[in-house]
Image 1 (cartoon, rainbow, N blue to C red):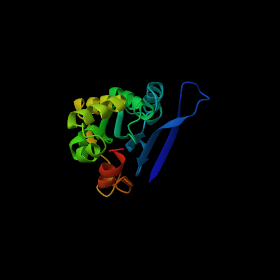
Image 2: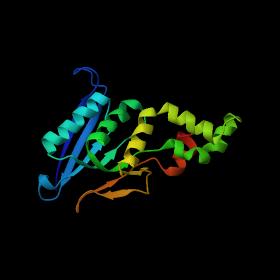
Image 3: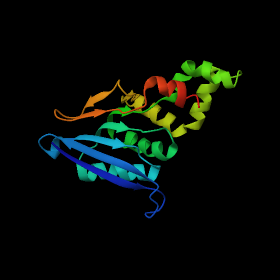
Length: 179
C-alpha cells in the first residue's frame, strides 16, 4: 500500500497559515490507481488551490471522498470549489438543519418559542457555505453521508479502511447540535 498526504496552506497571504486544506491519495499497487480524499477546503482561494493541486499532481478530476470536518465557513468554503470543479463521489458532512425536528424538545427547553422551521433557519443562517455545499453535492449526484462514529467504516482500497472516530449520533443530537 502507498499513500501521499499534502497539506495546503489556508489564508489570505502565504504567511497566514490558520488552517489547512488536505489532499490525500491511497493505492494498493500504483499511484495511477489512487483513491483520492480531500479534507476540508479552507477559503474559496484555498479551495481553488486544492483542486489545481489534485489535477496537477494526482492527474485526475475525480475525488472519491470529500470530508468536511465541521460546517464553519473557513473549512466549508473551499469545498465548494472541489464540488464545482471535480467529480466528487461521496461527501462526508454533518447536515445539522436536517435534525431540527429531533432536537426541538431540547431547544424548546431553553426557548419555548422555537419551532422546527426556526431551528432550521438558524442553523442554515449560521452555516451558509455548508448549506451551499450540501445543495451543490446533491444536485451533482454526490452522495452525502453524515459520518457518525460506529456507523461508518469505508473501504478506500482492498487493504485500507477509513473509520469515523466521532461523534456518536446520540451525543451529536443531545449535546453538540442543540448548543
